[in-house]
Image (cartoon, rainbow, N blue to C red):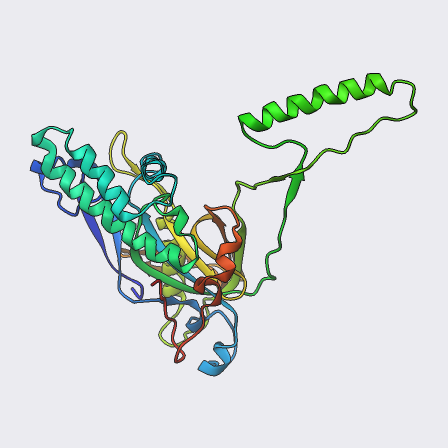
Length: 355
C-alpha cells in the first residue's frame, strides 16, 4: 500500500471521545464491532504525482502551474450539539464576545465543581482535551479571520492530507434580499408597518394605485458553498511508483473515511470533516464530502488490490473521479482576506501551514 500503513483496531470507545486512554476503569465502553482506523504512511497524498494524465512524466515546474486544492482531513472530537452548547455558553459567559480557551476553561472549571468526585479524573481529561482541541481549531480559524466561530466545531487532524488537481471554473457569489427580517423585534416592526399600510389604503381609497416602498433585508444563506474536483486516474500507466493499485487505494480510502462506522447498538462514528483550500478561489475551514462519484472507462478487468487485505476487484482502464466538498459554514468574506485563500507552493513541495 502507498498511502495506508495499517488499519488500527480500536476495541474500546472513550466515554468522553477526547482522551486516548481506553482503560476500562476510566469509563471507556467496549465496542461490539471494533473501529478500524486507517493510519497514514505518507505526509501528503499528491494526486498530481499520480497517473492522472497520459504521455511522458511532466517536470515539476510544469506540474506547479496546474491549479490545485489542498485538503486536510479532520475528526470531529465532540458531537455538534455539545460543541454548539460550549460555543453559545462560552460566548454568553464572555459577555457576548468571541469564545476563547481561557473563557471555556473558566466555564469547565465551574462545571467541575458540581460533579461527583468519582468522575473528577474523567472530567479533568475532558477539560484538558477540549482546551487542546480549541487551540487546534483556533489556529485554523485565525488563518481564515474567523476566530469569532471558535468552538463551533471541535476537531483534530487524522494525518491524511491531499493535493488534488483543480480543473473546474471558479465558484460564484449568490445573495438575496427579502421583505422580512428575522427575530422578535422584526416581527413587531413588520406588524406595525402592515397596520400603516392598511390605513394608507383606506385614506387613499379613491386613488388609482397605492404602493409604499418597504426596506429589504439581507437574507443570510445557511447553506455553505460547494466546490468540485473532477479528474481522471489512468490504470494503464505506472508513474513514479503509482499504478492501478494506488489509484484504487486512494478511492477506497476516500469512500471509507466518509461512511459512518457502527461500533455498537447506538454508537456510530460519522464521516470526516475537511479543510479545503484552493488558492485564489476558496478557503473552507470546515467542509464535508457531499458527493463522490467514480465512473469506469474502457475495458474492465478483475485484478488484485490490497486495502489492506488483498483481494480481487474490477479495474477499468481509467476512472473519472468527481468529488464535491460543501462548506459547513456560511460563505463569509473573511476567508478571502485570510492566508488560506492565498496558499502557494514552496520549493516544489506541497506544504500545509495552519498556524
